[in-house]
Amino acid sequence: RVGGGGSELALSCDMRFAALGRAVFNQPEVALGILPGGSGTARLPRLVGRSRALEVILGCDDIDAATAERWGWVNRALPPDELWPFVDRLARRIAGFPPHAVAAAKASVLRAEKEVVDDLMAEGDAFSATLGHPDTVAALAAFMDRGGQTREGELRLGDLAGELSAG
Image (cartoon, rainbow, N blue to C red; front, side, top):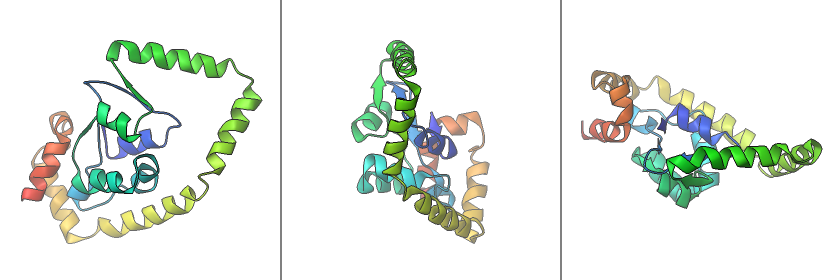
């Protein structure tokens, strides 16, 4: 399960893989009166498209691994017993190629996304602007009162975000 900053950390990775029936992704920040400020608004639309990114970011709901794969959030969603063998095989395969070619290919792909830096800066400014808003303070307090900072709260983050919107 990755949500909020954990999801944004995953979004920043070169590749993402998920276990079917186990992995869950979300961006719950809007329910708290803030926005994804760690790359969610800059990176997620590039992976899943504008409309789906808005569904995730504004809806604050859980997305399962199969949906994440279908939308392009993760490279692949595999049965749990197949996940690590697949990722290990892929990593070993890449590691066996000439390092200079791997580095050059990665740099070339990253150059195609150079505008992401400007978008990340704008996202950071927008995130900072939401922090002191009275609605944010109230939403964060309600989140904490409902156990949002606990393991149990984290496991039901999508539902908890929905409860916050219901008041």
